[in-house]
Length: 348
Image (cartoon, rainbow, N blue to C red):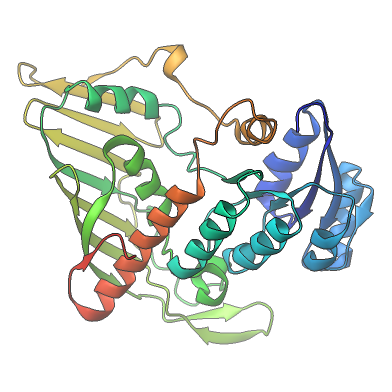
């Protein structure tokens, strides 16, 4: 649609949408954010007033069906990603959706299949931003043999917090809203796929520590089933074993980090410090790796979506195909934790 104005409707205007998507779309030439629908008309009107959006709809169906848009930005919680995407594609509109792709792997596949039925439309997921600054550097070193044969991978995605006993029920702890993607395991697995590819099987154990939380909508305590702690062992297609640990209850733990161990070298990425370090067989210790500017990625979600819609570049981060892969992984974790058995991937 080169030369045409991209008219975007926004469904769900939470913090990330207001911080990034709306203002950054508005800065792109030939793009207009023309409508918004939020959880209530009142909250939608506040967002419209803040960003000068001309039209507020009462609900997402009205917005998607209206003729004033040709692209939909989905910023809702995951439970609505599938129905909104299917409706948008059926209406002939491009889709940019927040991660997580869907509530579960079945929904993710429905979205992928619908996107393939509309190859003329661009479908993109907001990517994992944790590693954009080092993705290219790590990919290159793995590809060029810096590590030798990759033997072991250790992903520690714990948040250094103690258990919030009696805390508030937020959407991530409400399976009805968040689906099967626990904590931040999907976002880290997405990054891992960029570097070394996919897992072929998963074994997992999970633990719910905070069993009740306060539902702010009802004012009552509600039982929670979403785990606060997850331990995963995965066999990777490249032959490595991966250990992935995610937690919201490990007070004073280290900040998230990833180790890649090979027969000839080691790489370590510290997320909070944004430091990549490495060492080869002849080294005595890890040393910081200076990532050249041309290899450093950064947040360009809105620009890349618009460029893909205009046919200037293909979607790279993140495709619906990759979204299905990380939804398969997260669902395999759930199935393994429930059965005590290894679950092969892909789920199919």
